[in-house]
Image (tube, rainbow, N blue to C red; front, side):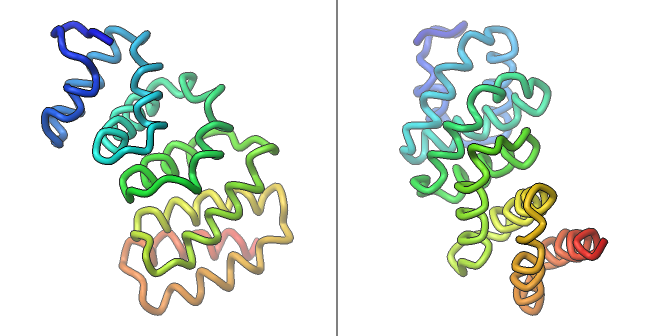
Length: 176
């Protein structure tokens, strides 16, 4: 798919991994929002590094344009278990953490979030978004509160300062 500079989106994504390139592509997307479908398609390919870089653009773009995620939450949730790269997981969970959680997705989201939160292989950022999503799940299904509390408390002993900060805030809210 062509864009304003005459290159296809994948070529632009692979050009370089930098905030400057990501910002450039967000600007392209802001001008030609019809390209969102192509960025989304590339994200869903689950091919590193192009999908991870596309996820970064989509994540940042949808911060100011959340309506582009509205009809894609179910698809994104369904793909989570298959995502391989940390960046793809992180950006996907970040998008989901600020999106409306649909009842149809809660089982998948709760399962993958509990699994990733307990996995020593997952990054701190992914785990932090898991905590955020699981806290929202407990607002709908309070029976998960004690499990979430227990897992967070176990993780606190060896957690980074960032994880400890969000974990303590969530633990406090779970007490209410």
